[in-house]
Image (cartoon, rainbow, N blue to C red; front, top):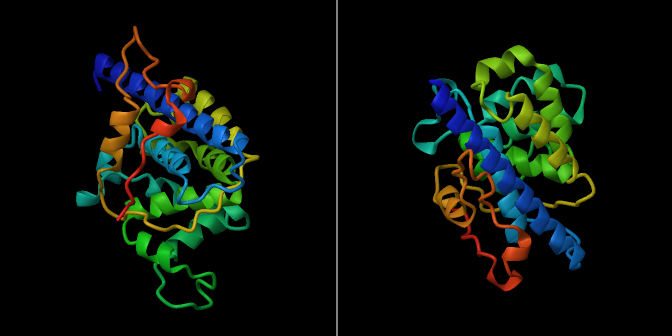
Length: 237
């Protein structure tokens, strides 16, 4: 990419990380207000999933990861973990998602989940399912750290400006996720779309990601988003 375009994309990454920080602040505010478990019915938990998905899709090499009509997905970037980390919960989580389309309970997927099976029909759905499973298991940060150990694979999958590859952005991204370790998630994988939907466009309207060198703070903070006016997310089909 020309230098100017790469710099613009880097600022998009800054905006995504700002969006992620705001989503975590909203979840934390809910926690302070007495919410014990975050699941598919909590709108701020859903914003968090969307923000993580955007961060992982930022700067993907499209010729490897475009899923046709269903859009861009990071799923295939994660799949080597099933082999390299097969003896850990990280690798086993990737395997769980890969087998989630199994339609009957069996020894190959003994923890079959009907909602998960419906989500795991495309790479996009599998990626969204993996985010929720990792949050449930408290494995989001360890999984990304494990994937980043495969430097050659990361370079192949991401452009230089990507959040997962740019040192400044990545060293901001990982500590942000560290703050999730004490939050309990219990997603039931309900309503995950396995195709492209309007959710991304909606959240862009709520939290604009376009930034410039002169203005890198476009995401509203919880203090400027009154509780009774937090946007209600539509149910995913």
